[in-house]
Length: 233
Image (cartoon, rainbow, N blue to C red; front, side, top):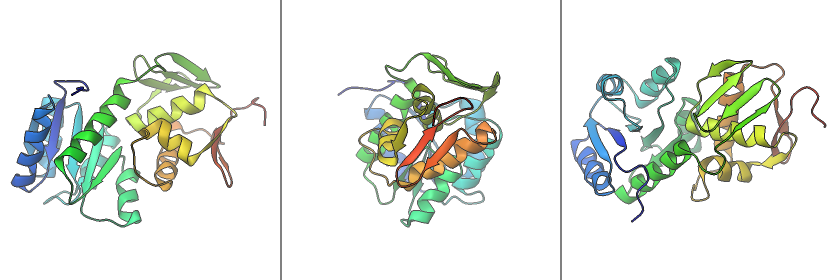
C-alpha cells in the first residue's frame, strides 16, 4: 500500500455517526489521522482549532448545509481541500457543490474505499508533482513549490483544483485544451466526473483572477485556452 501524506489530518463531517465511524476506520487504516463531527458549526470550529489537511463534508447537515460551510470557508480565504458527500445524483446538484468551492464529490451510497481513493487523489494534487516550479504569464504568477498564485503581485486564494488548472494554463499559454485534457490535468486520470465539472472550476477561477477581459478564453467546440495581452492568437 502506498500512502499519500501519511499522517495527514482528515475532518469527516456527517450527521450520521455510523457513516463517520465507517469512514474514520477506513481512513485510519490508510494512515490518516481522522476527526469527526456532525454539524456545520462544529465543522467550522474544527477547521479553526485543528487545521485539517482535507475535509470530507456531507451536503445535508442539520442547521447549516455543507454548501454553506464550504461557502463560508471560501469567503474567509480558506484553501482547505473539500470533498463533498451528496445523496443527490443529478448533474445540477453535483455542480452546485463545485460552484460553492468543493474540489470533488462522492455520491451516496458509497464505499469507504472510494472515499479513501478520492482523499488520496486530492492530497496528491495538493502535494504537487513534477511541475514544482515558478511559472508566469502576463500579470499572473504560479509558484507550485509554495502553492501560491498571484495576480499583479497580489495573492489569490485558490482551491487545489483551481490551482492545478491555472498552472496548466500558465505553463502553456495559447494552447487549446479540451475539457477532457483539463479534467486529467486538474483532477487526475482516475476521476470519473463529467466535462461540465471543468466549466464550473473555470468559472470560479475567472472570478477569482478578477481580470477583464479574462485571460481564460472559451474555444467553442473544444474547451479553453489561456491568453494575455500580446499572446499570439
